Image (cartoon, rainbow, N blue to C red):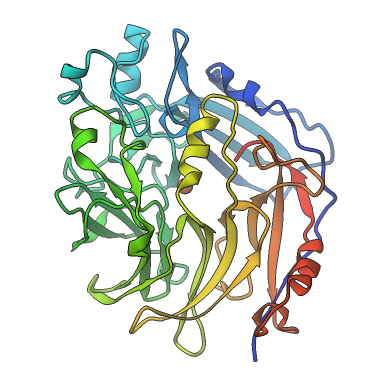
Length: 436
Ligand SMILES: [Fe+2]
């Protein structure tokens, strides 16, 4: 009866770096295109192309630190591979807010987890900075730096020069474009969403051609203002898991609390499951299940029975937000554990047919390489290396999870902890990787 999931051994673990806090203690420095020295091994000559990474790079000015890891100014690392060599460029996204704060050499704006500077009676009209720090989308003629609270920034693919805001020929000023777009493996269409605040938020769905130009946009009414960070593209469906986190808008608007601190965990409401038709953007079904929170999803596909299968890193509550807030300070106290789950949904009812925990040890950032064979592709994710005292540590290793069809351990009713443990003991890491 079921499919099998096993975790493949890939490579021996390396101890984590306990000094991650040092990497964010001071702002990262830009550098022009430079050849990278190869410390060990060789770069395959057939490996050609560019790797782009984005992340919070400046978390302090004049000794003042941002209030949340999500508030650091975005900087892009581009690594170009060709002829067995690698060259890298590192540049901050020159957003309007970054430029103004650089000129003033002080923070001027609020952001997700940081209140605007100045007296409390001035905060209600303060501006917020687009940190452009969450991810990238590489298009044929440009690179987009993404941040889920606003519009993309347009960068040059080679120099990483910032050209300005990019509306994708469609976005209005109040229409955010979130940070985890998905490409359809067959059509090449790019799907994304954005949550527009209001008394009740609107979930905007976007579909672009491969050039990025938005060709379809539609809004879905939500209850309250939830935090939705990622979604699933499963062939002809978009799936949103709306966690029971709602913004207490008044203190946030008045500047009494940051948006992060004004987000309230309300588990009595459960997590809503929303299935949307990827062609029409019509709602196919709404459902509700147990309360959980998630940042990220792994693979999504429609199986041979017509059901949606998705992977998600689930948290029992919203304490993960507090943990990520603490990361900005260089020391974490809150313990959180995200687990990788696989969920099978009936798309017509949004009812869960079955669900199983694939990895019960703390993990995050599931990534599936671009492929049309999503059902059999590996999922790569960040995890703690075996034997590491995870207290206060960031993830220090990457695991590969490979679905196989030759056993059914994880789908068996009444799966015991021993069975699960055996699978987990087969988890090994492929390389050391500080940070996320
Ligand atoms: Fe993310």
